[in-house]
Amino acid sequence: MRRGHVPQRTCAGCDAHDAKAAMVRVVRTPAGAVEVDLTGGAHGRGAYVHRSASCVEAALSRGRLARVLRAGVGNETAGRLREFGSGE
Image 1 (cartoon, rainbow, N blue to C red):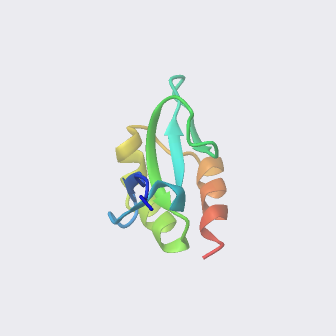
Image 2 (cartoon, rainbow, N blue to C red; image 1 turned 90 degrees about the horizontal axis):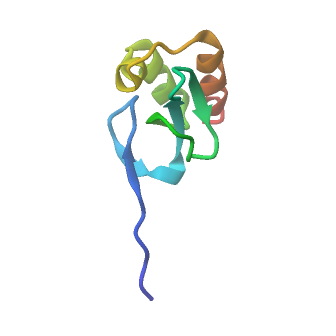
Image 3 (cartoon, rainbow, N blue to C red; image 1 turned 90 degrees about the vertical axis):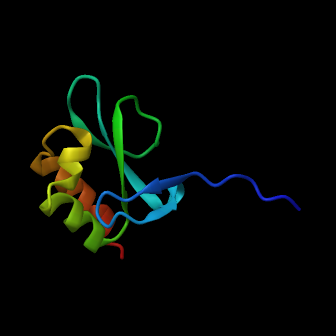
């Protein structure tokens, strides 16, 4: 049986490559708002982070997420992202 292609993405927190489905997408919308993208298909510039507290904190505290998105990450978005990392 042939196995299909598994999309790979790089985590903004730890720089490791992993399956797209194992990560949370954060997007900067065309309007400039930064949001957690639960569907994975929102329009805008995206970044991916593992669903672990260590990766979420690394992406936020080191400014990597803001650098990748080219926009500041607000407290509300950071709090929402931390909720995904709390299930480690």
